[in-house]
Length: 357
Image (cartoon, rainbow, N blue to C red; front, side, top):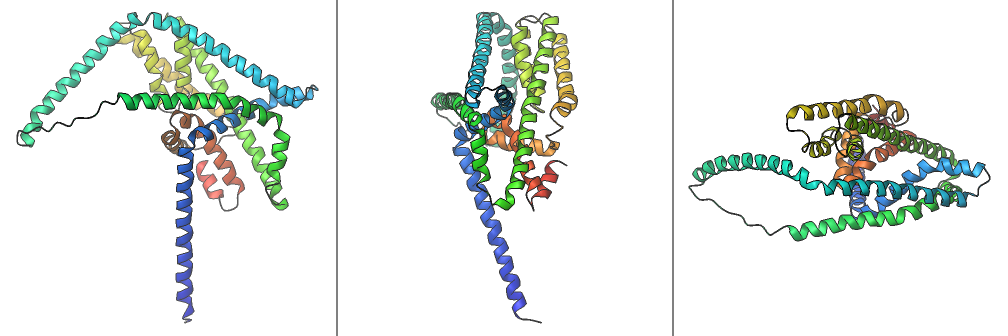
């Protein structure tokens, strides 16, 4: 037996271990960068999604002899006007809701008082057991008032939203107006032998993202309209505002159905004093969520976005932990893009097959 064989085997094992360690370290660096640069990355990703959604309209205007830069500018202005109009309508409805808030506060306070009494009773029973286990001594732990940390946290959230809202229109305009230049520059980053594969990958990514955005928008509109009509039919106050919030919350997989119950319950506390109407509302919202998850999403989104339930759940957990609410919104398009890339890169196909199994 050749004495050099064990040496070569050990050397190969050492190289593989070093390669694995380097990959783990690189992954940790990427995750840390995504966390600390969350405002910048989320803003870029939102602009990219909007650009994929609006690009067909700009291309249509270009076919009508409208210069691409002018068409991009008009689309961005119209989009901002539409967002402003929706915000104005929502603010008007919210003003009416908060004007009647004292009427909603009384039943809500009675409900929370009942819950508080149950909690206090449970704590009292626990406190009767705790001293006996610790020799009759009860240790009290004092904590600093969290008001300052809460204020700083809210200010940070407001800053992130304002940061994104300020830069997204500019990024969107540049992405739409300079699409061909950016595409050509991207192709130049790769060797000539790989450009065909890169082009096919980017085309598939474009199709997946556009399909996801358009399909999700259509499903959201359907859920909002159906929720609004249902609340209007049962005579619930603020039917449009409640239907809008419940419909959008129902888009969230799994937890969305429970989240959609909350606004309907808050509004219904003023009108309903028995559990029957609330059970009916919960049943209808759950039915809409099941229809959206099993019929609407597969028909409108699932044709191009092929992800299994486990991959989607892990994506929501990871990106939600990393970026909060923004991560929940971007989890599916990010994971779908990763799957497309894995499908086109040699050696990564098993990962793509697992994500879509």
